[in-house]
Length: 162
Image: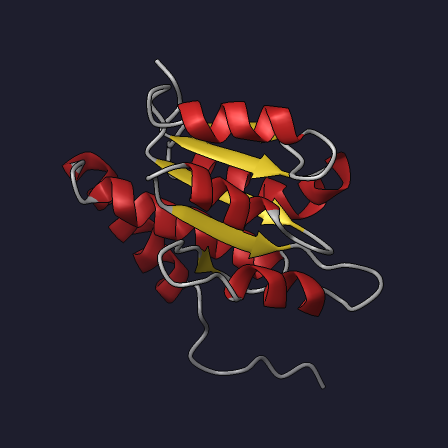
């Protein structure tokens, strides 16, 4: 069986960010398939992946991209599956170029756009988990426990480090 979530990215360097999505999904016990699918350098690979994603058994796609960041939008244009876009921080514009590219999709081609970098990758995984949890009570329980543990980890008072 195919993993329910695909994590795609435009290049190997994007893995530094996208691994946080993979790690979050693993912590929740959700299988994910991670692959490099560049909108610019491997367009045939992108078309084949996105066109066949639903038939392959994926339920959600998390797409990370830097720079021009066309990968999330192109994937969304080629599949009916929900696509969550993660802007990867770039050296030139610190990820703003990526964010603007992903968030400006035309009406009719939705991409859920997350924050730039690690926070976005983590939250994309949590959103994907929330989608799957709608029809998976055990996952819903694991997600609730994860969120509870996160809440309980926040100290009520600051530590005195003086």
